[in-house]
Length: 162
Image 1 (cartoon, rainbow, N blue to C red):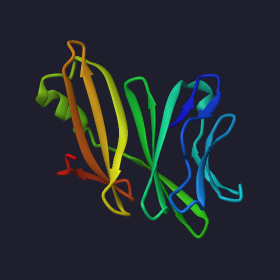
Image 2 (cartoon, helix red, strand yellow; image 1 turned 120 degrees about the vertical axis):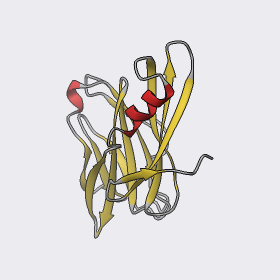
Image 3 (tube, rainbow, N blue to C red; image 1 turned 180 degrees about the horizontal axis):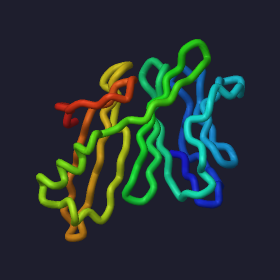
Image 4 (tube, rainbow, N blue to C red; image 1 turned 90 degrees about the vertical axis):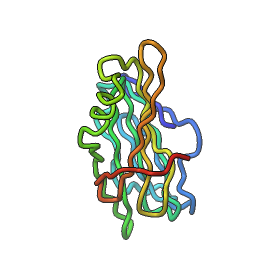
């Protein structure tokens, strides 16, 4: 977990190294970067942290070639997937295409959500990750919505409920 405050003070809580130990997510003064084990910066995963108060979590793929990061601020979150090829990284934003809002409406909680936590639940394989959203309504009802995201940032339904 990487915590980012509005004053661009970033702290890292927990291990942010890839499973093979060749990469790591690093928090700088006002950005979160992806670095090689030797400290060489491969690119910026999240920038513009000076004006927000957010929490960032990261989950590495089993083969260490991709990392999904979730930047949570208030009831909003950005889900990003960063892939590595030849020591170069590319970051794509994941778009749920309004499916979470549709789900909330179907559950009758669309206007009642008090808190929402978005997180990468688990990798299904080296190319697909389950993203989960846990919403709590003002009256205490908890609902969970899950979807699958690929390395290209495209999403689809998720049948995995573990």
